[in-house]
Length: 409
Image (tube, rainbow, N blue to C red):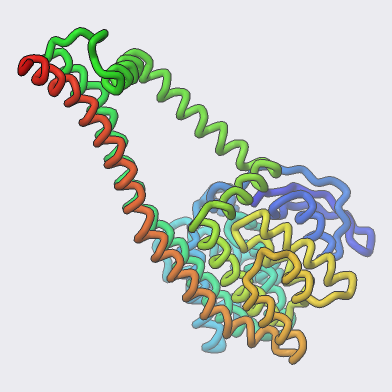
């Protein structure tokens, strides 16, 4: 996601300016148009890399960091307070008094001040696009308009809880493979740079008479010993350049498309995206948001720009009068069961209900796919590392075996 500074005019001709969060310029213009704002100037500031907000306080403007877990915790408290019948302002003030983290206290203090000055909660939250996503703000706005803010926050809590669970599962899934890969790479470097040269030096064999595999490994060992620092700098520079390239629109599309084609990984990503689509669009429709507006919000929750662009195409077809299910199925990027459920929901007028019911099934499928991937990836890494280390050991033992055979003859 990127942040865009904009200057626009509304339907009454009033000039407006602010900051909006979107995946690209086209999406930013679309979000402004949905609000009845016509963009006159749009400048991309920077890609979102962390959840921070500038909060005005008695001590001046301060930059505070608010994590997704903080947003979920506050949302749960707001949902409980609103269900109990508390007004929004009073709920914000009570929740603020219960916080211990300065960042959350500052944020809630600022929200309370804006709400007490006459702004709606969604308008106050719009000031912090790095903290509150377009999905979050859209649902709050609809909840305020329809007088169902307590129900809206209940849906938001369900969505945010699922997203936190997905993040936690992915982190846990990545921990063991990363550890195996790191230990394996360190072992390979140690064997090449220190162990192998010492063994060859102990043998005292002439390099010219060494077996081919041993010569090759000694060449790699000498290179690492002399140019290892240069290789490390090249790797760091390459990673930095790659990350910068991924942030560009073409790079983001190319990388996300490549991920979808990776065996096992692509299936996991598609399954996660289908679950997000069903739960998010179902929640938005349940809150009264139109299909077109819901699709524009959903596209940024899928976590993949290629899939997001497919949703943009679906939205364009829907705007032209077609159903959601038909272009969704023609894209070939989404699960057939999802397409059938959307079609049935449109025919029966129960799209929100059917999507939310199906979301649990898709989430279970995503969890199962992630578990299978996690159980298989470390095994593959261990086999690869064992092959590399086995080759190194064999190449190290070849000169010793050759000397024994020569002595025997």
